Length: 139
Length: 428
Image (cartoon, rainbow over all chains, first blue to last red; front, side, top):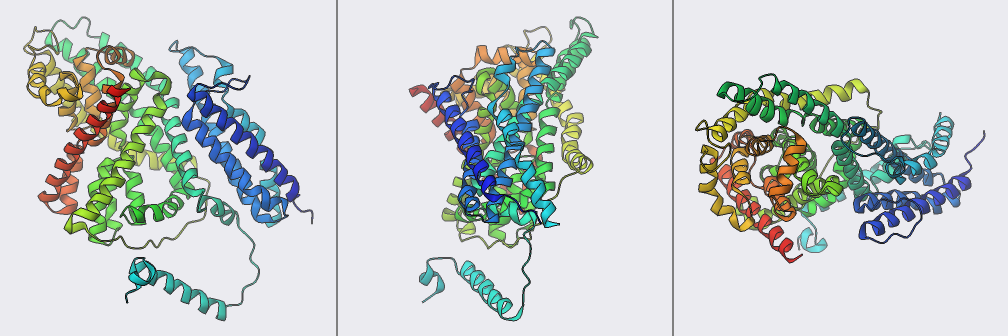
């Protein structure tokens, strides 16, 4: 039976972990007033801390996955669930802001509304393949 | 020598650990296991129940819940508000008491509070998803160690979390806690968990004074409530003879993770949210009419001015709150907030003569400084449970003594917290 490539999963968890932690740090720095990146990173203390938590979850599984142990997938799966939770919530918030704009209540800028939580969620989507494959193998 | 002295731990915890150790040995010796496959629930539990990651994950999820509640409900609130604005205009110019009652009392007062049905229901939707997915019992498990350290049993976590919705059913839910001291401590600190009725106050004031960080300011109120509950629980456990001692150990069966269905989420949300709808039709309606009368009478005076009944009441009580910078309008709102916390916003709307959320926010921004506004939110969080909650505390404790103690300590705590905020704010 075809198995999950745990090393590939570990490598992907590493990429996602580093991305989430980096953007989390940038959001916190931006909140303090230090703008380091050329991207639109909102200044948000709690948002940044939440990204750090998700990044840490991904990174916690890297060592185990690279060692070829299946247990590490748990961190990748929960990281993906958190990514999806935050991504969907910020997509809904984007929609709500657009609705407010449509009602004439506030300004709307697609670039500013496209929060890192959303594009990081899209980057995390391939993890769904690992979840699907793992669940298929379990059956 | 006692076990406590030997291990420096509570005797019951040591006994529970030994009991499970013995059970483990017997099972190992007598049961032959086949290699079991890891289930998806096992995988998720490995991380959600993680010693170090469990609590940060829980906090991140709760922050996301409040962002969802605050931000996503906003356009729906605007739409309902416009509807009430149109209804208010049906009576024409409010030049007669009856027309004023319709436009300023019912449509502006009650209508203004009705728009908060959206953030309240959105919060309940999020909590229902967490509960039905099986995550909430895990959160109780993760928090048990922390709860134990603050003098509350792990079983107190669910009533405390329910307090974010409404303190009334949350206090009733403490019946599941066997130990009377544990239960009483949980009841006394539960009103510090910020219920849904306080959310409209935060939404309006944070939106008016901290428009760029409104979600975070609202979240900070919840964190402040949790912090105060922790401190009070610790204090009560150490100081009050009737509550002294350590909480009992947690025994909890964790259900498997499930995907909540829209129907089950809808049913649970409605079950909890209907309390607000019923309140709106009874106590909030009566509160709106009473506030309109006090603000607009004697008929002909400037509404909410010093000559109105509300103005006179505010002037009589305001000196107590002048060190905190609370105006007579804020003080009147606090007095009527004892009936139900939602009335605070309703009262401010009527007193400031504001019919729309934008108008009341402008009025608050013009009359209240950010520091005073933040202190006011903290005061609302802490000062008193609503009338209905006081009634349920009496029913559950069976004692007016504990009710009196709850009211007194919360009033003193609210004043102290607000004074600290004003003090720190004046240094910035």
